[in-house]
Amino acid sequence: MSEYGGPEVLNLVELAVPEPGEGEVLVRVTRAGLNFADTHRRTNTYLAKDELPLVPGSEVAGVREDTGERVVALLGRGGYAEYAIAAAAQTFPIPDAVDDATALALLLQGLTAWHLYRTCGRVATGESVVVHAAAGGVGSLAVQLGRPMGAGRVIATASTAAKRELALELGADAAIDGAPEDLTERLVEANLGRPVDVVFEMAGGKTFDRSLAALGPFGRLVAYGIASGEANTVRSGALMRSSRSVVGFWLMHCLGRPEMVDEALADLFARVQAGELRAVTGPAYPLADAAQAQRDLAQRRTMGKVTLDPTVS
Image 1: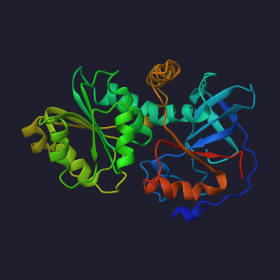
Image 2: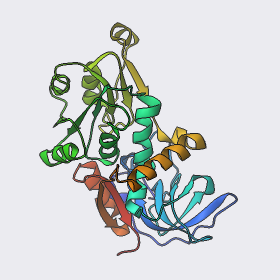
Image 3: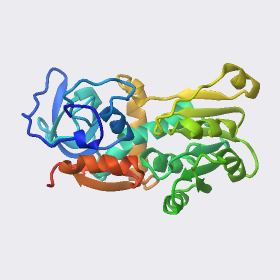
């Protein structure tokens, strides 16, 4: 990217292979992960500002050039490429039984889903949990983690019948349309007529407001995305009158804190290897089709983890 804007600013170019510095490793990329945050970075509306020119992409799976080990890595930038630089401390071995797309799904999305339950939502045994965008990368994992992490009832929302069916297959107790209109009432109905305890919310705007209204006393809404691009205002008096909480979460604050990454990622890998957790992997686009991949992701045409494959043309 040499400018900010629509998907058309993503151009395939030839660059020199980057050279790792102190504490860094060079990874030959076999899959690069796409995230909704990439679309915000493309328009310079992300939480952290970028500098141009920019090779986007915050996660890759591949092979360490120095050791030949299969790894998955978190990056600041540079993932949409054949080679990427990663901090050694943010590079993790991939177990033999785990494929690249699954490893990528567990890295950003999996860690996010894990911390939504444990760190931010602090879901107690038997509490109801609402998972918005339940067929997406984070949502599809969060639905499956619900019961193992103590949720009593998992309510999924998704935009199409096919996505809602997938959420039910993954273990949701109920799956409803996530459209904002009458969302509060539908969530309460899906929770058998009771206000809900916890909501994992990534859209913002009306979805945020109507999800917050569906919470009962001491309920928690965890905001981890702003897919709609719509801002919200939360009033302290309204929170006090309802005893509700709003918690923000950005995975980047876990980086540099090994105790927040190592244990969670090991737990996720172990669940996959035991057959208790399935990463829903979506399409793999050639690197040259990164613009189309972002269009499809933004327009909700995909399900599960979307990746780029730099090994195919």
